[in-house]
Length: 237
Ligand SMILES: O=C1C[C@@](O)(C(=O)O)C[C@@H](O)[C@@H]1O
Image (cartoon, rainbow, N blue to C red; front, side, top):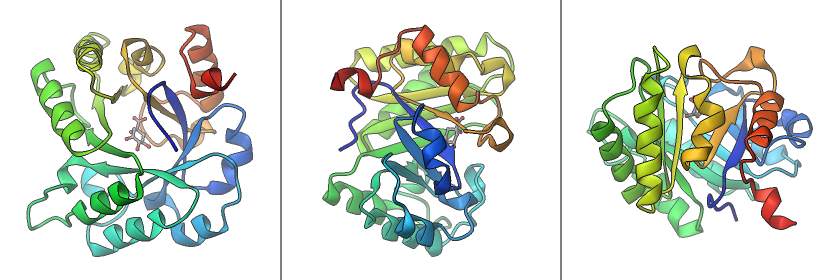
């Protein structure tokens, strides 16, 4: 079972055939179902070794899936696949207003199955204040196992509040994943784990980035090693 006690590097991809290329560097795959042509067939045919976290990002949170019950039902079906070991759900899709498809049934099913739920929040314009970050992450942690804050830095200084919030939340016992999107925040992807962030994301091929400012997988893996970030494989030895 995936437990995010140490940092995990996710290879973010819409193509599960990428698994052999990801395996030397990644601890799991983030399968971006919203970017895949036939995600449920791909999951059914998967025979890779890395565990899969499923994400079916809606258009209103920077993804490509239109909102609606199909997005929820695809996630519910995905949870039945044996390789699926975690799911990412947007905070704004939980306890959602009536004009948005509510993903509470997916949260409930994941919890019945004992699967970790990453509750994510994205801001494509800014890094909000430290108190806002703390509030968002605390709500995420109340609902799921990991609160993810993917915020946008327009200046390297923006990263400071994100790192401070990461450290405060971790010290209080919360499990968080944090990263600053955009080129000015790219360094956060390598150093946020030093402040407690438990998940990072990288595309195998830099051409297929799933967010602005991502390093490719091999590069981020190398940086994490340089900074001696503890990874799940280290604890298996
Ligand atoms: O939410 C996240 C984080 C992310 O946006 C990033 O900035 O690395 C990449 C996405 O694929 C993932 O679902």
